[in-house]
Amino acid sequence: MGKNNKKLLLALLGAITLSAGCATSPPSNLDNICSIFREKKSWYRQAKASEDRWGSPIATMMAILHQESRFVHDARPPRTKILGFIPGPRPSDAYGYAQALRSTWRGYQRSSFNYGADRDDFSDAIDFVGWYNNTSARRCQIRSNDSYHLYLAYHEGHGGFNRRSFKNKAWLKRVSHKVSARAQRYQQQLNSCEHSLPKRRKFLGLF
Image (cartoon, rainbow, N blue to C red; front, side, top):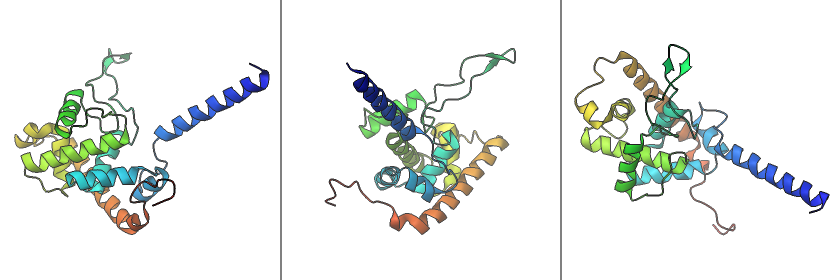
């Protein structure tokens, strides 16, 4: 292979790597859902598909993802510390945008027939949140737009929520209020820009 061909190959590999990095990087403005969807051009269509499938509002699902991972695709819980400074094991196997546990994710895969779903894929992660909120609405009698209680169920599990395991967790209630407030802001923002967001994928400019 000649020098010019090697340089071209390296340039192409660099471009591919850079493109992949940009594809999985978090949005630049996490506080504005319109900005998020304009930057991540496929996310609105994927969020809308989850809303239509499970009946969970886009703003609620996005507020939960924000709280769980700040839209970092490979987020994990921080490691515990041994003797205060030695990195220890992680407290759980939660992973991805939705910080879903492996066992709960498998339940989603079986229930939704989405067996190829990945926790670090946004489309799968937001569909997971929609599915979980739909299950919370049925099992815990929570309204689909009640972001406060939906997040409590998301964090504590359906059994824990029904046992009111959050009752004495003041810190969790504060977090749930933050999620609820963000969902309200996201909804207000979405009301102003949703009409301009792409509704479906375009193929060859025909649609």
